[in-house]
Image (cartoon, rainbow, N blue to C red; front, side, top):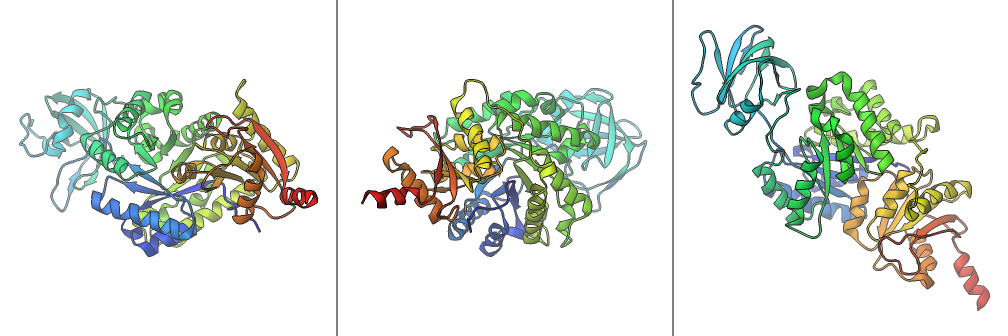
Length: 493
């Protein structure tokens, strides 16, 4: 039987304490991990370097393609250090948010002091206006700004609760001037580039300019640039989604911070709009946050979580992501297996399957070729579509049309193949060299048979650029019968 995975939506797994050993990473790969996410909000460069080495070696041993995504922390706005027992905020109380490490200068009678990270205090205070909402701990505690004095913000508690050290802050509705690429991010990004990560995710993106600036900084370091992933979680990013998609290599729907920023009730419709827009432009998109959250502590998911994963598949997402489930949960491997099962079951439901009504851009040869290949493969009963591509672009374009048949990218670069780990439905192999026209179909046959993507007498559809096989020259489509090449050779002899 062909060796192609029946699953088209890819799985991203966050690595951490529960998934840092070679044995556990190998098990995650066997269970279906396509992309390993390294969260640079935690861990040292030494720790992440070991993870990178382990993922690469385990993937090679398993004979599978696994990409590595570096997720930059971004400008995290957090409380400072609080007493070990935490601080209980009561509705109606007034607080002075002041830079950690200094005593509040403008504390008013009846106010209590609450430290926030010193490095962000002045910048945040400069953006806050009276009446602005300031939320803590993913929105569990809500306050409202009364007035600002220098780097100190005076607030009143609207919704109380207990806070502990370094809990996050969100300012929904307040445009922040803090750069989304911090100095820590720059150092982490340089490390990631030096270790050849496949993608770098930028947190708290607000505009297309943020993505372009990061790309410029990466290009200054290397010509082998990783992909840039735009994390959509701020109100400004939602408003600018179309321009951000156009300049991004991948999008990530970061539903956790997004829910706090824009309101949880808006997240489902924003998720669907982002996926729709990305599908139309052929930009891979990852749906993330709390997809199987209960499996951090339970071997089975809730019904709502199973529906959440399935609906992301029905929407047309390219990837779904596990965070705490694999990074720190008690059942990391089981979570991947469950997610894979939900994806396959959802994809098998033809009534709700991914959109296939997207048409090629007028005048684009590669789009017309790959669109036609996606239709022809189904009509002739082909078992797969073999896409010869140097950069992977042709395979990405083909995936845009959501073909029913498996897509096999045949490439001569392992690095470029790993980038396709983010793309819906595409699996692939690398060969030493993509050969010229005379030997083209013999090479395709050999590759498809060797990796068990097809068997003798199967039909496949082949797309390539002939006669030169240069980058960006896809101009050919052929329905090919496996074994026909050797039959012709035998008749000639």
